[in-house]
View (cartoon, rainbow, N blue to C red):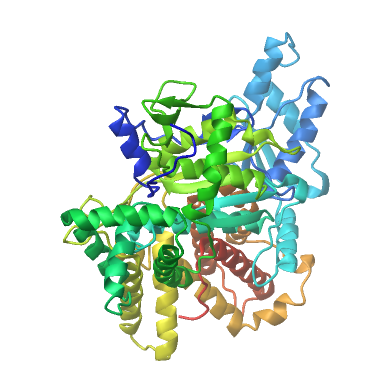
Length: 640
């Protein structure tokens, strides 16, 4: 069969690759995440190179101090990477260096007997640390060679002063230097609903995880291209176009696209004559027939309006670039893969076999039609060659892990990742688990249908409004309560998803996500509103506009703990980018709120002799919360 013979294409990113694998006798592999970097394919969880975008973060400050010290105690030709982590036990210190054991082993292997054991090496490193400007309040060695450090309050105050003075738009600024960025330009492929189908709870995770990753990258200065790879091409359009043609004879207008789709599907499954006409309509569409194309565009536009309503509600910024965009590119991409002997014919289909055993990636069916794999290969080629991205991120469910492993492998073997003069293109599949109901099954309606996303978001807002209206001595106007309910409801849904490790399933529970006392968006929003109230009552703006480093003296341990929590934001952002795990920013935000509430419970602010430094701490907390809220897609509340 000639290469250029497209007839019918499959669409539907979330099903077709798995079905093709099973039909050909293959098995779906266990859940695996894949990253391709330079010339190797490797498990996503394994990334020895830590991301560090700020040379002023707490972690990088410690690392730099020890890197300088280590040069004084090691042979000049020996170079090591210092491993710095937060202390698991805060009573031992703020940060820990656990590299002494590894370094000692290497010295011993090299025949160097300068140090008798790892602890003596650790003690030498501590002695060599240049504690200039009073950086550390203490350094100590624990166990076999763990080095613990505690920052001085003067250093924390100095850094906190810079945080406040450098803040913009009411949020902490965390831009990285250009030479430390993990990528110059990133493409993030997320959301990806199917045209003519309603967005449901299954699209929620991809949409908000993808948006959060985009905002995280943008916060440090990475140019980010958000792409919505919608399913806007394929066999289902034949039945939709034919049904529309029959209806238009009666001056019909699509008002309910979901009902229209169900009617079309029913006719397609039960009426053989309608089915044949539908198949003919697909051929006409792919041939570029003007009338058929106009009707296709109309269906897409009706569906697009419904998607955009959801995106506006969730504050999602995304550019639609669906499957049809890449349709004309597919033949040339497959030609290239055939020429490079990466794609080969097998049982009438064009397949890509991985270097290791496994189910092949079918990039053209035996009937000549293209499919999901065909489109993804063409999309990747376009994003590398034309968009010039050096990092491409796909946000889909875990069921697609095997598919993306095969696509990434094909791109690597085709040498697409090393075409530019700059660094190799990095590829990531950001996979996620299922949304479960409280019964332990997939979250659905009582009748077993998927829950429309619009209904789910509306229910969350309604429950928040009901809760706010039930409060005693409520003095907030009705329109302000509705706005607060909107912010709380949407924030609660987003945070309940993002706070979980994305690779696990999570249980959707309105009661749990709207709990004021737990690790919820409601608790975070109440904390921010409390801080705003304190600053309003004390004329905090006046205090903040006229303070310097000398005004911020930390004397109470709760003050110090709060300052330390605030300053961990840059390290948290690095950690999120390192493994593309938004849950780590949720952890930071929750821990910051806990630290603030403990501080506020122990330290009087308004009317105390230490009112000014404590108001500065309140303001710095609010700045950091608002930056975290923005990245998580949560609007702040200033009054409740």
